[in-house]
Structure formats: C-alpha cells, structure tokens
Length: 408
View 1 (cartoon, rainbow, N blue to C red):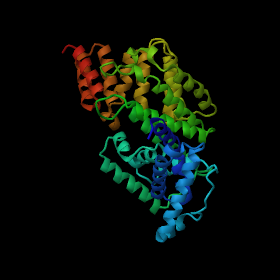
View 2: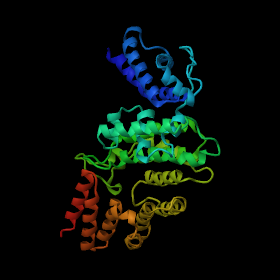
View 3: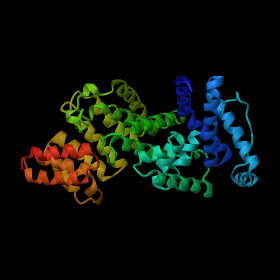
View 4: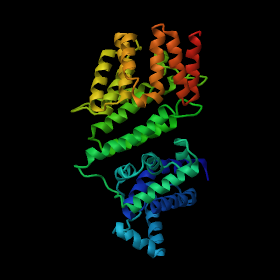
C-alpha cells in the first residue's frame, strides 16, 4: 500500500475511531461487538482504499461498513442477538453509505468513566475506546504488562455489560455529579504524561498530548461547561513548557531555571484565551488551577511572577478542594511571596499528613527551603527522603545534584 494511502488511513482511524466506536456501542449496546466491527471496517479500508481510493466521506464509509458487519454478525449468532436485545432494542437499523452518523463520543466518555468501574480501568478504557490506542499501547501508558492491561479492560467491559451500564449522557440533574469523574480521568492521563510515575524520562509528551486531544473533543461536545474549558486551558498552559522542562541530557530543569523562550507561545495564547471563559461565574478547581498556570506563563521570570495573586488563587482552591497537595503548592507560593521562613513554617505544619509522607515534591520543597535558610544537615535529610521517593531518572539526577551542592 502506498505511503499516501497508508497515511490517510491512519489519519482517518485516529480522527474517526472514537466516533465510530461510540456510535456502534450506543446502537448495539456492547463494546466487544463495537470494537470487533470497528477493527473489521478498518481492515476493509486497508484492502479497498488502495484500489478504489479514499472515499470523499471516509468516516461514513467506515460506519456503513462496520454497521453491515455488525448486522451480519448478529444474524449469524442468534443467541448473541437475543442477549443484546435485552439491553438495546434497535440493533439492526441501517443507514445508507452517504448518511451522516451522530457523534456519540460524549456518551462513551461517561460510560468509560462510570463510577461503577474501578479507578484503574477508567483511564484505560478512555484511551482504548476514545483515543484508539491498542491494548499494548494502553499498557505502556500505565506502565503495566500488556497481559495485565488486557485482563483489566476485559473485566471493565464485562462490568459494563453485566451491570447494564447505559451508553448515555447523564441528565441535567446527574451531570454535575458525573462530569468531575470524566475530567479526573483526563487529568490523570495528562498528569502521567507531565510527570511520569517511573522510568528513564521525566515526561511522556505523547500521553499528555493525547489527553489534550481528548479534552478538545470533550469541550466541543460540552462547550458550555466551564470546568471542561478550565481543564483544557490548564493542560495547554502547563504542556506549553514541555521543551524547557528537560535539559539536552534529559535531566530535569526547574521552573526557576527554564528558558522561557522555549515555551510554546501559540499554545500559551490559546490557553490564555480560555481562562476568562472558564472563570465566568463560580470558578471550579480546574479553572482556578488554569489561572495559576496563566500567571506563571505570563511572567517574564520567577522573580516578576505575581506571587500574591497566586497565593490568593491557592486560597480559593483550598476552599474548593481541600487537600494536603494543594496546601504544599500554596506553601511554596507563600515562600516566594513572604520568604523561605514563612513557607517552611507552613510545610512543617503539614508534616503529619499521612498522604505527604510518600509525596516526593513535599520533601523536595522542604529541602529547597532548608537549603535557602542555610540548614544544610536538615536539607540533606529532606533531599535524601525525596530521592528515595523519586520515580524517574531525571528526578533522581536532579536530587543527587542538589545533595552534592550541599558539600556534606
């Protein structure tokens, strides 16, 4: 197959896969069947398109092909069809090849993030179904063996089927309670891309970029939801710094030392345009975090950053989502506004929090402030603790360097 056609098929698959799978899952009520016929439609495209050319409406071609294959499968397997009929009535309605098909991805977002599913399955299903990643690719994203991920996905799909979790968008009365779960799944995917849990690299930019792509889709589907806009803005404003966050040797570069000329200016501009939209009306947690990221990205340097405003935003965030991690970030901002002693006092007050004992940034932040105050031995102990908890090689390289700088 020619490179041009192969590239076209890949581009169509990436763009249309989520829509195709979502529409089929909604129509037939079964993710396994939807995935099977989606793959079969792609395989058919790989056979026919090199000969016949890529159709004018490749998405509709794929949908019509997949639907015909689904109907054939159901007609061959009457027991399977009867079982599906219990959960979905209209199983065999066909549309013409030219017909447009609805965008059911919003339903699939909520199905993949349903609260009845285990936490570790929600992100996996989202990447598998909406991003179109293969099971081995999803396994690499979550740093688990492919066999483990395959079992996890099978169990999640079985749960959807056996619990009859509906393929639908929550009603207006349910949406406020369900949407945060969807956003959390996307943010968790992005966070793993922003700072990897383990491995030789600090960042996994492909994973962060995929989270942003999914957030763009979600915003198109829910344009009036401010927190969706806030999450997309936050991701853009943070991911814009990706190229400056590591040195040529792969080591970590802190915000203070980053070359801001390497930040992605168009991405920052896009994020900055979204922040005011996210802040219209009562602000949600993602909108507030996006506002913090905007202040960082707008500043010419760490010294000229509006730290009083950042502290004020963290005060708001603490009222929205009280957590020790937010408190750590606020303490670091207070240290920049009021000096190291003030920040250290706040961090020390958090030292009894169980969650922070295994939270590397907490110990690294304490070590930095202790070093600034000349408390070398205490700083060394805090850096050593942070080093024990570091997950990636660049983090370890950075912390070892800081330990050497103490000359003890």
